[in-house]
Image (cartoon, rainbow, N blue to C red; front, top):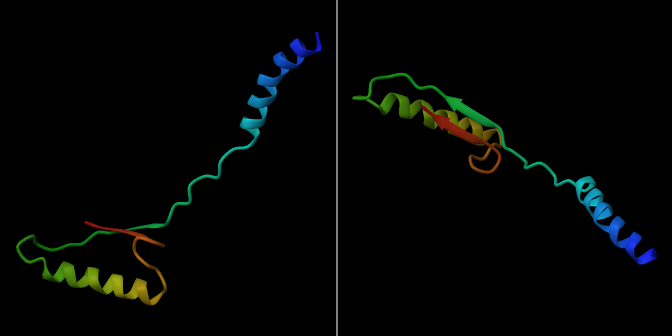
Length: 73
């Protein structure tokens, strides 16, 4: 009789233990969006601004792909 009681209680205990031990949420890095203006025929001005932003971010210690995600449009 004790064996049957144990076998009935075991799945419930395992389920409760697995629900209590939740995984850590994934760590997301901050995202930065850059909206660039200019004409598609002359992209050099927009590109210069994007390079300046990247240089300043790296001077502040932000590394694109590791500590920051940058999307330029």
